[in-house]
Each structure stands twice: as C-alpha cells, then as structure tokens.
Image (cartoon, rainbow, N blue to C red; front, side):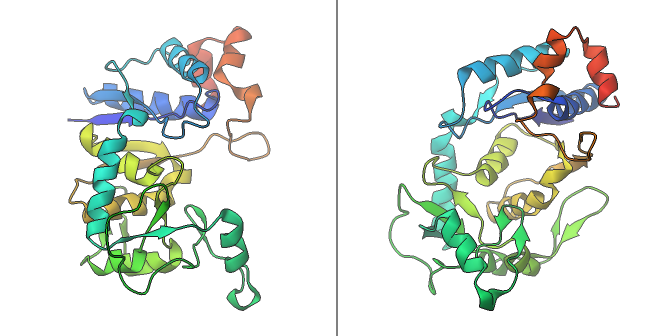
Length: 277
C-alpha cells in the first residue's frame, strides 16, 4: 500500500513549488494504486485564514488532484499532540523554555561561542534553559517545551534509519548538529515536528514526499518516531522549484502563485510543464 499526503499551511497562496510537490505526491500515489491525502496544517491559528484555505482547495482541485474528504485539520488534534507531549515529559525528555528568539541569537553569538551553528530550525539552541536534572511535576501549560536532545539520544541504540537511498543518521551527532528543538510552542500548544509525526502515523502514511529543504528536519521526525514507538515512513525529498536567480520560492512570491497563472489563462497542463512534470 502506498499512502502519501500534501500538507499546506493556509497562510498564503500556493505557488509553483507547492504545485510541484502536490502533483508529484498525487501522481506517485496514483501510479502505485495508492491514496493521496490532503492535510491542512493550520496549527498556527494566528496566521491561518479561511480565505487562503478556500483558495488552496480550489487551486488543487483545478490542478486535477483529488483526495478523501474531509481533509484532516491539525487545529482539531491538539489533545492528540498534548498526550504525546505528556508521554515525552514523563520520560524526562522535555523541559520548559522561556527564551525569545533574540535571547537565543544573543547567547549563541556571544564572543566565547564563536559563529552560531545552524540546524534545521535555525540557530542551534545554546541550552540556556536546559536543566541539570529532569524536571519534576506535571507538564507545564502555556510555555514552550524543548526536547533534551542528548538525553533523548542516550535512550536509543543503533543508528536512525529511514528509507531514501539507504540513508542513516547517528543519534550521538544530533545534540550538536540539531540541538534541543522546540516540540511545543507556547502560542500553539504543539510544534510542527510533533504534529507531523503523529499525523503521519494516524493517517497510515507510508511515503512522505516533500521538498529537499525539509531533509534536515527528517532526522528529528525519525527520532520522535523511535522515542514514541511509531512506524517510520519512506521519505522522498524532491528538488525545489527556484526562480531565475536560483532562490527557492516562498509564499511572498505572489507573482508565481497558482491563482495568478490561472487568472492569466494558464491551464493545469501549463503548470505541469512549468515545474517539469
């Protein structure tokens, strides 16, 4: 069985890069006789907008994609995420953090620290709030929670393996190269990392097809799968669609939005040709 998904955030328009990822996943599922799911990544309710979600659904249908209805929505699954966070807390692998982004940049850029290291989530957290011993008591609410990466990796044996060209990751490297990533955000109740792992499990996703910009995040997701005894899908990280300067497209690139091409008279076949499909 081949089950995959496309998980856009309703915080802006779909552009050519989104179209490539969605069509590729849809085509691969169809070729394998499998299932393509649409998932709405609306965890960040401060930025999600119903109008953008409606546009996303309309653009994907116009491109000829279909999926089981209704689409799964992350905003309805907070209790599922919090239960998994509580499990990690009880394992002694999480700790509260009240650092702001400016606090982290300042600490990581201190003269004695040298150039700040970059990980999948940006600057590798310097450990400012990391406790010497595992926190006691109930898991706190309304605060960010970080994964104690060294403690988490110490619970594992052997490499982290995911199926893409036989790649493996060595856990003991992660505290330095990835750091203590945020697993729950104060204003969202969870983070992308924990949400995507649980969503993929609950939708029985067998193949994750996404951009190469998320390749480094995959090691975090495989680690969380191991910690929570969840299955690991096969990962395929595809090339990125870039502009004429070589810069990858972002949601602010409205000139390359699917809606803009549609308004100019483009067809779904034109979009496929633009992205090399």
